[in-house]
Structure formats: structure tokens, C-alpha cells
Length: 272
Image (cartoon, rainbow, N blue to C red; front, side, top):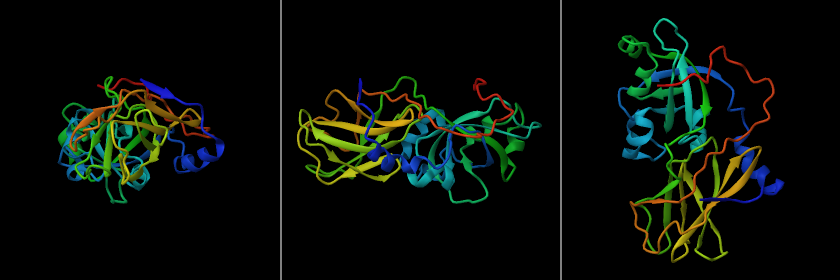
């Protein structure tokens, strides 16, 4: 169960939300996508999901360009997209999770096999994969992991008693995690973690004993603290293990967008 604190002070919010205010993400945008023969674009991903990426979203994965990856903040974000060539492309589109970064300035996304093929009309997949770049329309959408709670993987770089490196998994909704604190269960001595990249956070002074965790996420037009009202990491936490926080994030960050371009496509259409 997640505990939501009142909105943060305006000064803190201005600092934390500044990196998220560059564009209205609910807008439908036009861009290009290219095909990657591997299931996981560019071999596992700079976002750090590794082999676990295969289990994410049924293998419908993407690597994003600088605008989508945003220095790691875009890792784990979900997008709906469809291509604009009506002769070979399905109008149903696909939903993908961003798990990697690519540096090709000619395309916005590099799609794994299942996602790219999913854009095609029946019988047109082979023809689609022959194209160098495919014109698409896309937008960010809330992530849905079929009822899974926000979880953390203790990374192998962690070393007791004080070095703690974690990775967030199954972050639902349409939000960004902007800050993470850790404290011993029952203590008010919260210690901040630093982002390594994407969903990975680290600290060199981890408290001892069972640990609780809280995070600042974007939500509504504001930001708020979210934490689990229970022990998240046991006193004997182990690298390589995944721990369920008991919290679930399903918020959708709101934006005061003006002049957001409207698409001719119905983005509420069901995706198989």
C-alpha cells in the first residue's frame, strides 16, 4: 500500500520538476522508427534492464533517441505508436517500453522485432522490415504491468554494509521518479540516493537493519512523496534479489499544454 504525502513545497517542486517540463508529453508527435533484428534493441540496453527486458511488455521494446531517452529519465516509459503508411501498416499500432538509448539522429526509435512487426498489416511484416526508416506517430502513455507492484532489484554492485544500488521495476502510470530516500524502519533519519542512470539509484551510506523507502514522483500538476508502509528491504538483503515494495504507482502527470497538436488517428483504439 502506498502512502501519499501532501504536495511538496513550491520551491522543491520547481527544482525537481524542471527536468520534466520540456514538452507536453500527452501530445501526439511525428517521427521515424527503424528495425532492430534482435528482440532487445542494441543488446540489452543502457537502461540496465539486461535479460529482464525480455519479460517486459511481452518483448515489445524500443530504444529511444535523445529526445525520448532524456539522459536516462525516459527509461521504462511507455509509448503507443503506429506508422503512417496506410498501404502496409496496421491502424492498430503497438505499445512499447523504452529500455535502451540509440544515437542515430535519423530516427526517434529503434524497435525490437516483435514491436516493429506489430506495426504491419497481416502479411506485410517482411516488406516493413526492409525499410530503412518508417514514418510514425507516437505519444507517451501510462504503463500497465498487470497489477504488479513497484519492485526493486538490488544490483550486484551492492556491498554490505553500506553500498546499496537498486533498480526500480514495474513503475506504472505516467510518472517519473525524481528523488529516492532510504531509512531504517521506524527511523526518521532519511538518507538520499543518487541516480546512476535511468531506473538505477545508489548510495554509499546505507542504514543498517530493515529498510523503508520513499520516492518523489510527478503526479497531477504537482509532485508528491510515495512510500510503502512496510519494510521494503530486510536486514539481510541480498544482491540479485527482487523485493516488492507493496506500493503501486498509477498516477498520470498532468500538463498545462497549450496548442497541443491533435492527431487524425483515434488513440483510444484497442491494441491487440
